[in-house]
Image (tube, rainbow, N blue to C red; front, top):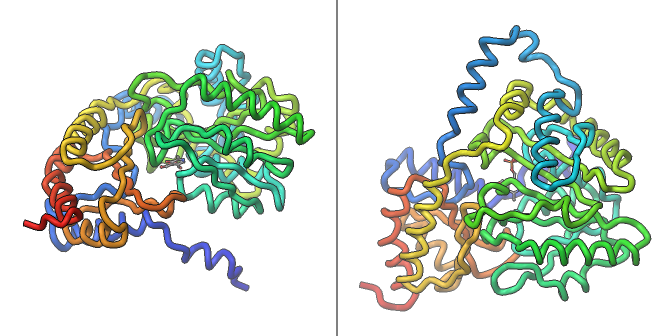
Length: 395
Ligand code: PLP
């Protein structure tokens, strides 16, 4: 019998994917040059040479049946050890490889962590705006997503968090550098969050877990991102190489449990159980070995920096309202007119940006600037026209 809930989920719309497919169809019929597709966060920085060289070396060095064979369910030892070493260096806390579970990217990490740490009826507190798939993963784990507003710069609002986290809160899920806003939480902010969660865990009599979703960890323009393990013991890090190494299609990432967590081994077993339940054991073997040798490296992000500078200059000059992104590769700006009107007009001009509704907030649009710089340059006159139209100055 068909599980109608799964059918419904399969048919549920994803605003980002829908736009991405629409853009691809438009490019096929009208040509690449007429479409300014800023819908999806598909990295445009070239995958670094170390990835290609390691892939070639591994293909030459290792017997194919070994290279392409199963690894242990949580991953091969080289990969887990390399990740543990990097996290230890970053957080200045010794992280053992036995607390690392290699996954098929951050999506798998999210699905596994939420399935493992949220029981039916519990709540997951998420600062809004947030990555839309969070809603799906929380719901499928039997939980309820509780969105919490952020401040005008999209940083944490501690009064709102204090009110939202209660006896029924299983976890707080944060994402810094942030998709869609580009906000990067400061060290002080992260420390305050750690203290709040200590207090709330005490009141609850059970841990409120911090789930730190970090696929953009290396993409902070100030170079600073506070390691979540250093601020709170009941933390699980969810990581992906999709953006750091421009490997989005290869599906590789990991989950890491803090060595300071009291019931860390039990939490790791629950993660392993959830991974087993989903059939997510043994992440892609070739890419586990590649990332083992490329951990600590990242793609050359200069294209994002150039695109960001160009957008900030022009968007400021034109008069768009936005909070300057400090990381990731997204610009989150206010719609200059009624959103439905703005998105229709943008689409007609071949400009594809994502409405903010699916991120849990109204009235904004997200522009993914991980595209070739010419696409940004070409889109500027169109954004200018959109603003003029919104202000009633149609020329
Ligand atoms: N979390 C956030 C905040 C993201 O932006 C993304 C992808 O864009 C993911 C998770 C999923 O990443 P992955 O490609 O590793 O599944």
